[in-house]
Structures are given as C-alpha cells and as structure tokens.
Amino acid sequence: MSASIPRTADPRAWLGLIRFSHTVFALPFALLAAILAWEQVPFRGQDLVGILLCMVLARSAAMAFNRLVDRRIDAANPRTASRHLPAGELTPLAVTLFVLLCSAGFVAATFLFLPNRLPLYLSVPVLLFLLGYSLAKRFTIWCHYWLAAALMLSPIAAWIALTGRVDWPPVLLAGAVFFWVGGFDVIYSCQDAGFDSQNLLHSIPSRFGVARSLKLAALSHLLCLGFLVALWLFSSLSWIFLGGIVVVAGLLIHEHRLVRPDDLSRVNLAFFHVNAIISIGLAVVGAIDLWLL
Image (cartoon, rainbow, N blue to C red):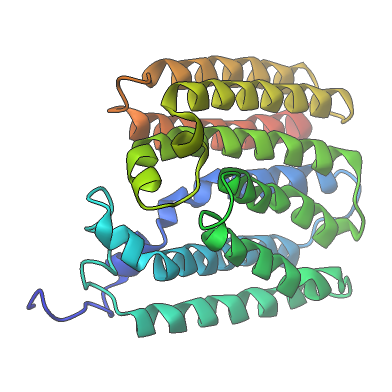
C-alpha cells in the first residue's frame, strides 16, 4: 500500500491512535470501585458490560479528540511527528467521525444501567469534561491534573452507575487516582518541557523546570498513597489490600528512581510498565481481598 494513502481501514492504526493498551490506567480502578459496590448491591452482568463499554468508548473518544486537535502541535514536535495524523496514516475527517461514533456509543451504553438514569443524565457533561482536557495545555499549566480529574471520574462513575449515589470508598479511590495520574503525567511531560516553552504551550515542566516538576510528581504520588490508606481504613478491605499498598509504594519509588532531571531516557518505562502494574495490581488485590476472605 502506498505510504501516501491513509490506511483508515487498518485496525492497527486505530488502536495505535487511541493507544488502546493505555486503557489499563483507568479501567482497573472502575472495576475495583464496582467490586466494592457489589458488596452492597446485586451483581448484574449488564452492569459489567456497561462499565466496560463506557470506559473503552469514552476513553477512545477523548484520546482520538486529543490527537485530532493536537495534530499540528504533534507535527511540529520531533517526538510526536510520527503519530498517525501528522504522518498521514489517518485523515482528520475519519478521526472526527470516529470521535462522534465513540461519543454516541458511550451515551448509548449508559442505557445498560437502567432503571438507574443517572449515568444517562451525566453522560454528556462527563464526556465534555473528558474532551476538554485536550485544550487545557493552551491556557493552564495544570493541564496534567485536568487529565487526572478525567481519570478520577472512573471509580466515581462506576459506583454511581451501580448504586445511584456517591459514597466514601469511590471518592477516596478517586483521590488516589487523581494524584497518581497527575504525578505520572507530570513526569511524562518533562520530555517536552523545552518544546512547550518554545511554542507557548502550558505545562508544569515548562514553567518550573524538570527538577522541580519531578519533586512535585513525587509529592503527588505521596498523596496518592495517603488516599489509598484512607480507602483501606474506610472500607471493608483487609490486610491483603494494605499489603498491596505497600507494594505500590515500592513501585512508585522505583518509578521515580528511573527518571532524573539529566536523564529522561527511561520515562516511557516508568510511564507505561510501572503504572500498568500498579493499576492492574490494585484491582486484582482488591478482588482477592473481597472475594476470597
């Protein structure tokens, strides 16, 4: 196939566009909140399907929208110039249609939670908030924590979908997600500190420098651990989950040892591999704790 022809029919291009593998960052926390909620409400298969569909579709819409509105910025940045839109592998029209399709699918998937209508009523405001993250770097250095707030909605949304209310366990879990995601996104964005500064884009590293940003990320992750301990205290989780928190603390320390202000070569290792272990591991430990004890 000629390189000049967009490969809009190639599934690998679409999966690469939305970085489907990165779904592991938010989905396990939605499932952990659901596992906690099922301690209080009956399990329904359609609710599980609804959570999976809503998470995948909402994230796909938001990620594709991010690539769409950032395509010119990505083209100018050597680190991102090979992404699908700058490289011509996908067209802006095709990605726009993909965003609309995923957005409609997300709203439609909330019908699976009926007779609870709250997910349907909240679907459009939530979706707009998720999409809004992609514009944040144009006007605020706190864009990393907009992304964090977007992902922190996952456990709260799952809890509301199953119970129709908000309670302390999902709020505390959401707090942990907020500071965890904010911290690792600050680390990830250190790669573009110079580019962002030169192109008038807002980020914490471009404003405060890489060294200070890494310290802020470490503080953010310390607060994440605090929220996880609070979740353990205010829920029915036992010593097994507390052991999982100890392991997470070790992984976060390892993540911060992988990156230094003068050496960002291992950022991707810290960003994906370590954080994937943290999110999936916590969900698995939570499930073992609640289902086997």
